[in-house]
Image (tube, rainbow, N blue to C red; front, side, top):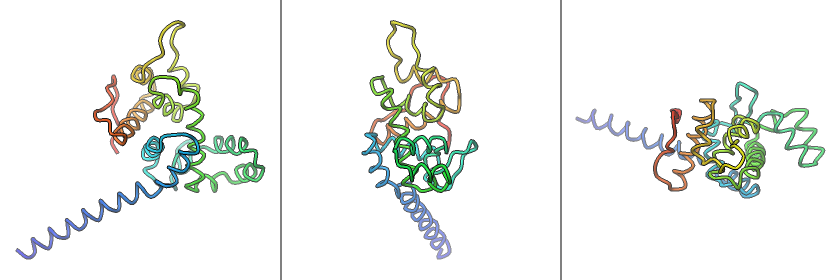
Amino acid sequence: MKRVLVVILIVLTVAVGSYFFNQYWIHRYDALIARQAAIYRLEPNLVWSVIYEETYFSPWKNGKDGEIGLMQITSAVGRDWATETGMKDLERQMADNPAAQLRDPERNIQIGCWYLEKFYQQYRDTPDAEARMIAAYNAGPSRAAEWNKVPAGQDQLSGEQFINNIDIPSTRAYVVSILERYRKLKGHAGNVNLQNSASPAR
């Protein structure tokens, strides 16, 4: 009997410890996210959801196409950001060693928010702008613009219609997964009702 109790105690200890470690892991950048999201007029929960999907808060991760850090920023996007700041030191640093800059969590989140905010400005007046923003972030602005097209004189696409236009399965799943997580954080119950789409398991 004592042996059973010891085993149960060990299992409970590991379970509780794992839960609290996971809570620490996924929330340790919350202050950085909130600060940069406020600067770029973004919802912190949306930025958090993008990072969750991209790297699960692992700043050392690299993507297969050269993306770096928490928000999987490419060197090209980093250089564009540095150029727009007009600060020569940042431009030089980003040109000389972009990986060092992009592996820094705060810099990475800053640039990721800057990039997302560009898409917010582009789609802010469309229904469910977040879907378009996330798609552009993942697949590029030209693809998002193509999926968002409607014939002249027709109403703008709803968020659901836009997502159903996405013809890259991985991008569609990416958008749906982030939106579901984002809406859950905002307190909206239910899943996104889309054709032939599913949230990838994590």
